[in-house]
Each structure stands twice: as structure tokens, then as C-alpha cells.
Length: 138
Length: 114
Ligand SMILES: Nc1ncnc2c1ncn2[C@@H]1O[C@H](COP(=O)(O)OP(=O)(O)OP(=O)(O)O)[C@@H](O)[C@H]1O
Ligand SMILES: [Mg+2]
Image 1 (cartoon, each protein chain N blue to C red):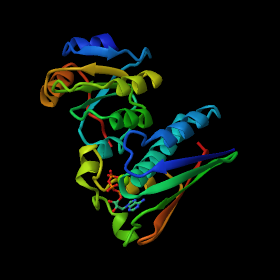
Image 2 (cartoon, rainbow over the protein chains, first blue to last red; image 1 turned 90 degrees about the vertical axis):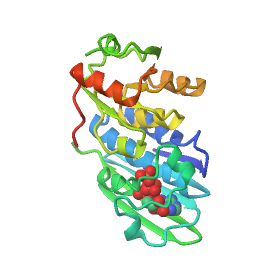
Image 3 (spheres, rainbow over the protein chains, first blue to last red; image 1 turned 180 degrees about the vertical axis):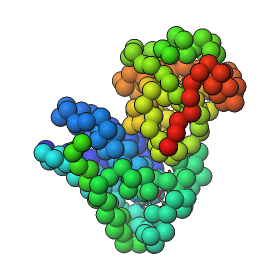
């Protein structure tokens, strides 16, 4: 099963809708609550990053028998130094993002923690691509 | 403790009752949603001074079923609508984050551990 969503940069009211839909859909598959939680947190952090740091993006989720595979792609400033971005506490978030309760530089490390596979690639000035896989095994 | 026992500790205004039989054992006080997303929040009450729709999204993703908005923050209709959809209880209080935390701690709720 495949799900596709468009994500608007800077739209903090809508931020989280795509992740919410994926969580809702996965619930119907009787996935373990622990796995559901990992998927929800990882996707929401990724969605918040597109909303916070990029102009626009897409989320494509593929629900397989034993895993969920998600690709987030955005058009935006991209990430200059991925290694640095992955460090806890590194953030370039704007004042607006901080006022929303985000921008602690904890999102990417949290995605890694809550996924079984994470691949982050980026072209500065063009955009960013994030691949997340979470296995359904107990 | 259940919702009624919880609210006895600080007499807040219950704006939305999520109507799920929760047994609250822990509380977490924060205005930083980035931090909330890092912990296991099952059976946890969130106390916050941040009043935005993203607090509800964060609660939804973290399986938080009760939020106390401190310092007299006014919850908006779209926040209440999202709370209703996801069965999240919303309580408003005039008390500060510090006093709410103190009362809940004294009432027996535990901190969230990593
Ligand atoms: N999709 C993206 N496009 C451009 N830059 C990004 C993107 N995702 C992350 N970054 C960069 O990586 C940094 C670290 O991201 P991370 O998610 O860890 O923290 P944050 O979003 O700044 O804060 P938090 O996630 O704690 O709210 C960001 O501040 C930003 O500079
Ligand atoms: Mg982030």
C-alpha cells in the first residue's frame, strides 16, 4: 500500500497531517504499539523539518508486509554538512520555529533513534532527501 | 490516577474530556516539543506554557492523552477540534508551570525517565 502527501514549507498549522494520516492507516494493520510510536515520531520529526527548513516537499510511504518505507523529498536550501546536522543540538532553526517549540537540533538524532534504517542526502541550494525504514518485527 | 483525581490536585478547567480510561502515573513539564518527542510518554500528563496546534500534534504522535495548559493560556477552537479527534484531554489552569509541577509531584506523579 502506498500513500502520497504534499508538504508546504512554513505552514505550521498543517504540519503533522501527513504523519498523522500514516499513523492512522498503520493502526488498521494491527502493528505493535511500540512500532507505531517509532514510525509516528520519526515521520513527524521529518515532516517538521520540511515545514521548518524547506520550501515544499513530498512524503511517500510504502507499507510492506514486514516494514514501512518512507521517502521525504523537499525543495529547499539543503544541508551543507550532513554530519554536523546529525549532531544533537545543531540547529539553524529560525525564531519562528523556536517559538513553535521546535529548533533544539534534536530531530535528526531522534529520527535515527526511532528508525531501523535512515539515509539522508542533500544538494545545497536544491533540496534534501530522507529515507526512513521501520521494521514491524517485535 | 484518573482524570478526576488528577484535576483535584489543581482545580483546572477541563475544556475537553478525551473519554479514555487513562491511568496517569507520570508528568512532563516543557515548552520545548523537540524534547517531548524524545521520551516515552505513555500514561504521562504534559504540562506546558506553549499554546499552539503543534502541542496537540506532538501529543498525538507521543501517545500523550492529557495536556495541562499553564499560566492562563487560551486554547483555540482548532486546537480543541484536533484534541477531540484524537481523544486528548485538555485542561486550562491559571497556575504557573512550576506550581502545577509541584502539585502533581506532591500528588504522587513521577518524572519521565529516558
Ligand atoms: N529538510 C531540511 N532542509 C534543510 N535543512 C534541514 C532539513 N532538515 C534538517 N535540516 C538542517 O539540519 C539541522 C538539524 O535538524 P534537526 O531536525 O536535528 O534539528 P532542528 O529541526 O533544527 O530542531 P528540532 O528537530 O529539535 O526541532 C536543522 O536546523 C537544519 O539546519
Ligand atoms: Mg527538526
